[in-house]
Length: 603
Image (cartoon, rainbow, N blue to C red; front, side, top):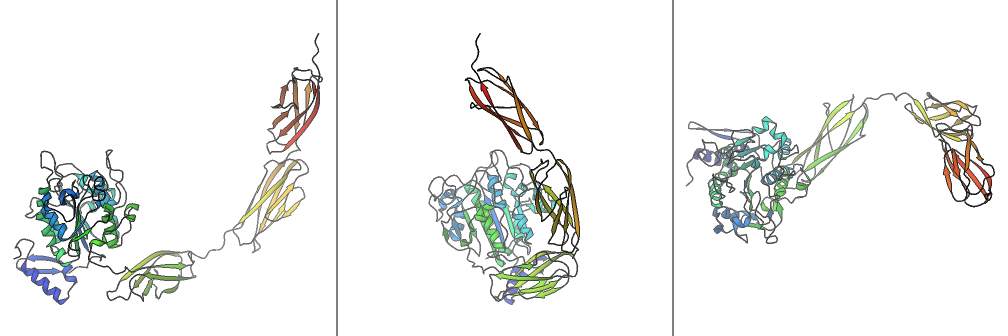
């Protein structure tokens, strides 16, 4: 006999069965409420459909490995380990014997489930992060969520205070700033077990018995119910946690949401204590079980999973984008489910040209994948006009940004619909910008006879361009680049004239200062030096562009620098002394002389 309590009404059940028989599918997604002796059914729009489930509840327990719950060699789970109810759930439904926690810091594991990363949580702390999380992905997809925290200080809100057996370390929602700092989102984090409850965690159970249960429901038991324990309040007790679940889970599985809609329960521990069948000693496997009408029965898997796998499963179920590389590369836990989903239908489109102008025809091309062919395509071009077909053409009358929406449908018996949208920016047809010209020279201050390269450029106007040059010394040139050597010192004005194909011209003018050619020579003293006598060398340099650098070669294998330099020879003989001068533009000049060094005269 079904129990009579606040969650069961025979009239509601009878009406529900009648409606199911008549095929009124969407009514059962509505809210069932009692008003005196009358039962009212308020229909509502069905939630977005998932591949495997439309609603899911996750319950996170604490700090016990799979060997604690199921015995040393699961499965099957051994009830003698102190958790007979959990062992029975796993043996009746599903159990993965190689599901790993990702950290030995509780907060890191909770954040990993909701945000697909541990975000550096450890001994140094776990401050709130601004990274994206599942809440962002769910809301963007039009899905709903709610967090249920046992023992938090407020009926609803983000409780960051420590007051055992509640701890914010087990509340991942306060670990993300875009939830913590958002009152609307914080209002969806509620106390699971207010004092008014007559059944375990009545806030969750009440929502499951309404017609508006969220798509994702997260339950964090307090540190007594989750087997963690806290000194002076409650022990770390497996039987206590097992008893807690035995009073809660039946109400979840018998709720309206689980009885009439595709709903799944996932029970998992944050971390274990070093045992795993993977290698028998060092891994950290924990109890992880999917439970519900869509779960397989008596199912066991030894495939390797971790907390990122749960995140990936939720994302895959509702076609949500990955949060990090962790969930992107994780294995989804789809083998736990009986449902074989249809190949998901998706659509996308391209358009050409990529930067259209007003009055220009734009071609839109649609594509689809998955589902069942043939596909049908309809278009909304964003300016009030519509179109059909895999390829459609449209011309925008004026500039602006237009949101183009493609709606595609497949031809399966249960028709799938997919949409894709892009913003198309249309610009006005404008005249080309005015023609401008400029040029550069390869040498800033050339010398007489040095070749200078001039490089011209033009922008605007209408290509192609032609270039003509007046080089300032009665010489002319043509082409984009010219070279010229000036034969006399002086200041020369160079004029570049650029002309576009429409006949417009633009000029650029600049001057170049040409210096005399670089020359050099040197003197030395004494004129008839002797061995070991110091000789002073002095350069005489002109022309070119200062400053100069000097390099001396004394002819005996030694060198020197500077405009003046001194040297003495160790042996008598004739030596060729060479001076090389380099100016600021890299021009060089050389001079050399032969010096005769005699034997030192002794008196």
